[in-house]
Image (cartoon, rainbow, N blue to C red; front, side, top):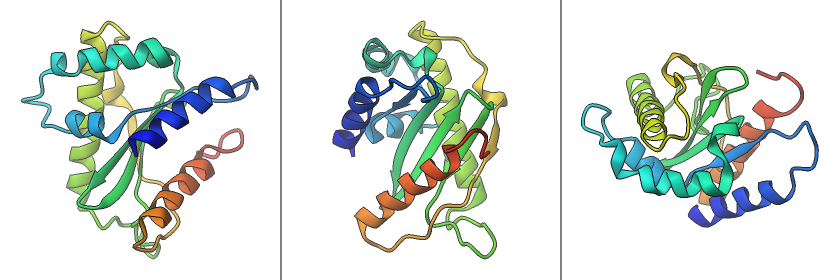
Length: 172
């Protein structure tokens, strides 16, 4: 996944000629795992050097979409902070289509998302990247295509739902 994140970021830097392209930055699951720690015990200085390095390459402060892929017990999810509409999207390809309920408990979704957002915000402040109030962004859980148990199919489902949510002018 880390290799894909690097490829994604490099490709985005090289191929953003269209003025309508959204500025996107993806972070590695390794960093996201550290950002998921309980916000009460998280130490922002522990990830400041890594975030500073990423910011030198990708300009986090000017990104429209920040992508945080995460693997929880062999289950892929994607958290996206969307500056354009002031929302945090939680993509979960295992959401049950019949009642839009995740296989993860609602409190787990909120816990994971809140910790990533709060800890990312605090680390950006320490690294002097930006000082935005991301905690007031509304959490949304869009539907994703159902996936099989294949890791590749899980990845395809995440990318597909991400593209579907962010295509066009205002699909959200």
